[in-house]
Length: 274
Ligand SMILES: COc1ccc(/C=N/Nc2[nH]nc(C)c2C(=O)Nc2cccc(NC(C)=O)c2)cc1
Image (cartoon, rainbow, N blue to C red; front, side):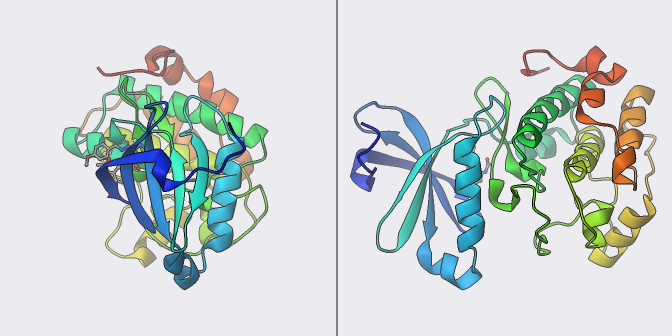
């Protein structure tokens, strides 16, 4: 029954799936139902040390409230003296990042399919006043059919204007976040442009040696398209309409869904292994 709290005894722990920022993730099976899940273990001392208590609570509240085929499910959670356990949906394809690094870059059909899936997931989130703010390949998982799942809502906000402290890669930051200006849902639209570029070229558009140079390139919208790999004009057109400095001028999510490149290349079932 849903009232009885989960405990570790309800699960058989399998192989470690990988290490996240603040904890490890294990394959696990719920003993009674034999249902396979991913169990994310976070040590309470890490939460104290990094003062991420509120961020973790927000992640859990937000992810539990969301239910969408392209958003990784958070089924529940429990804790013991020293650890917190998140019971998460298991996506056996692992990080999209791995696919991108293995292939160097994705095909236009794959890229368009994933951008369409992300757009649908973000439209759903924005409809529930949630801004993710941290969509990057490491936070994107694939299920057994190659369907994209947005994971790790650690940095998402319930549409307040909380500052995002600078950690991890900055390639995905929108100009208004780099300038610590107020930001809204349009930061996720910017990120779709960065991701679309990275899916097609294998590296983000404003990559630079130093963080300072990345900031400068973002603020200048220093966007160039390499000649290789060859990318269609429609794809470049979509990217150019998203990587726009003025948030109000970025292509809206429903306009993304109607863009010729998406209409022509995205697999409507969100599954694309070609
Ligand atoms: C190392 O090769 C791997 C291949 C597939 C996986 C699958 N992970 N699937 C997940 N489902 N739900 C969650 C949460 C996860 C998860 O966190 N995976 C995870 C965590 C940290 C690193 C990685 N690394 C990779 C390569 O996927 C995956 C994990 C590792």
